[in-house]
Image (cartoon, rainbow, N blue to C red; front, side, top):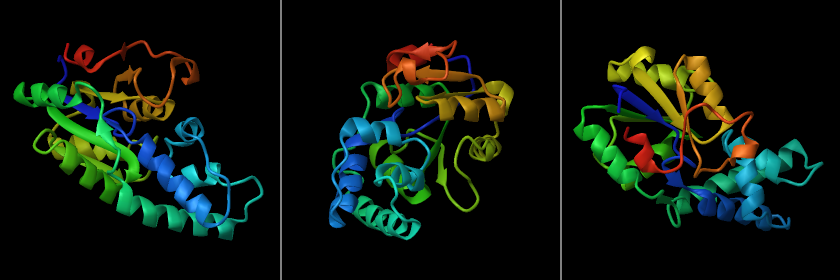
Length: 211
C-alpha cells in the first residue's frame, strides 16, 4: 500500500449490514401496518444515514410526524438487532491486519450513527483499526469532509498521504470534498451503473487493495 493512511467507509465496504437494516426497516413499517420493503429496495435507500433511509422507505405521502415515529421504531429495533446477520466482506479482516502490520493508519468514516459504528467495529475488527467515527453532533453526515478531517488530525496524517475507500457516490464526493484520492469497491451496495461515473481506481476484491 503506497498510502500511509487509509480511510474506509463502513456499510457496503467493510461490513455487509444490509439484512439487519432491511429487517429493522420492515419491523418499523410493520408495526404501523405498512407493507415491507425488499432487500433490493433497502439497498437503494441506504447511504445517507438512517433518517434518509426511513424517509425513502415510508409510503409516499406519509406525514412528517408519522415518519418520525417510524424512525424512532427503526432505531429501537436496530439498536437491539444491529449485529444479527451483519458480517465482514471476504478478505477484509486479513486486509486490515496487513495494513496495520505495515504501519498504515486505518480509519473509518460512516454515515451510520456513531454508537452503532463503535459497536460494530469493536465486535468485528478489534485491534485492526486506529479510529472510527460515525454521524454525531460534531461529525455531520457525508459528503461533509469533517469526518475525514477529524480522522486525519487524530491519526497524524494529511490528505497527501491518505486515500478514501468506499462503495458509493456519497463516498466518492466525500473524498473529493476532503481532497483525497478515491478507490471504489465493486462488492458493496452500489453497482457500477449506479455510480455517477465509474471511478478511475476500483477494486474487485479486498486483495486488490493491498497493492
